[in-house]
Image 1 (cartoon, rainbow over the protein chains, first blue to last red):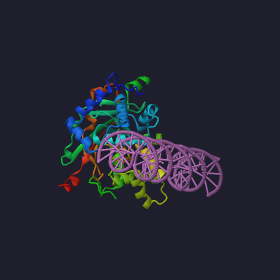
Image 2: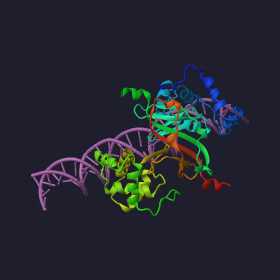
Image 3: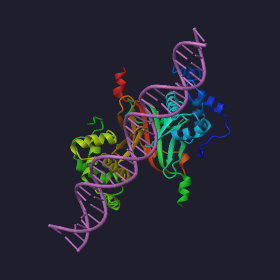
Length: 164
Length: 164
DNA sequence: TACTAAGTTGTAATCATTACACATTAATTA
DNA sequence: TAATTAATGTGTAATGATTACAACTTAGTA
């Protein structure tokens, strides 16, 4: 469904899932399991499907994207379930909210260090590498920083070439 | 209405207006006037009031904040006018949209180089100085970047001290 | 098998934003 | 000044995303 250049293909879903569980959720797999148990989170069929969708469509989909596509495979799926699942996944830290635009909430499975660029012409959101963790400001010496987001906007190469 | 530490007081509004027109809107005052004329923008009473509100309440207000407060002075004011005015001011570049949270659009009169920090406890949005202009990524070599935003979240000093 | 809790579903409510038609004001011209 | 036209403002209705909630289903357990 999504033709983003970030699309990951030919990688087994279970492999990716394990990869997050181990790598993305610090500090350890056991810690994550404990965390999930503490919060009584079971990866039900629907929740797994949402997670799977996010790995296979790393184009920062909206709730509507996720729901519409998954609904084809799971006719009984409810949009409320998608919302609930995303909220839980965000709480646990497996998924990141992207609020680069004010009228659409998007979701990103990758929680590693990177920024987001939105093309004003085609709407595509690209990831770009940047050492965001090291960003800081002396003004925030007495603040506790939990989340850092960097959002750029402009025109992507594809759209720029159209105007030439 | 707003007790943000960024609050600017005792400064004449017209002075501030001129200050933007000259400083914030590059490259020159004449250019700005031409720009405004080209776009047929007159600073009507309502539009001036919205601008004035944004200078006197630099706490990144929502549309509802602006409307509710101005409505006390201008009983005939319509919320649609506030929306229209903000859209125009953003287009022209005098006002910046802050989408640090997904359920609320906020507006910032300061368009200079700075980041935004939102306290998850009290909801206050703080400005912090940072050289955002110099941020870059080799991944974006072929992109045209028009806007850069840096959003941090966490706990502010006031809220941190409450938990001690 | 009955019980309990967690998870899912569909509908209704909420809330921010936009669309739009009409009213008002400002600017322009005769 | 009066008439005309364009720009702004206003209020209501429509839209669309998100949340609240109650009923249903599933999974696990005694």
